[in-house]
Image (tube, rainbow over all chains, first blue to last red; front, side, top):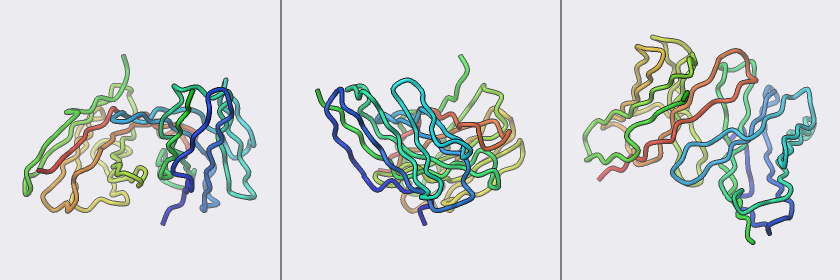
Length: 114
Length: 114
């Protein structure tokens, strides 16, 4: 049973525009959320995170929004660049679970075209 | 350079053979993890270890075994009992100091059964 869901397997955006990647979760015990970026045949790299005590966290072109009541988070990339083309994984963890154990969504393939 | 090293990058195995994937980290992290990635499946947890000489099954542990004799090393053995071993395997580590720490990933090992 997927506790973290990314319902859009792919997203295509023009360079310079905003990319919005969405993620939903079902476990109300999750209190820390992360986004990872992954290129083919490589390991995921950490992008940005947010704690449940916040509703927004920003790092350069990347912003993550958290809506706890809706159990929903989103990653905004502005402006999008061709180098952003990759698979993006949403992940979540809980203080009550194994420390550091992450639950991953299935990923969204972002393609940024010129 | 601190990081996680997985070897080999590509591995071929005949059906019925066991094979061991290597994972070494010099980040001084206590916790280590093995994930498996299949197309459209996201990252699924195979085994994890929070401390030397201790490890726990993840969500898909059947057909796999691990050991944690040293803090730096967490090898994964794919046994002949694993029915669908062809996949991309990712090793990760983190500091178990609470849920606010992201996991760092290796570059992965692509295992193909021939």
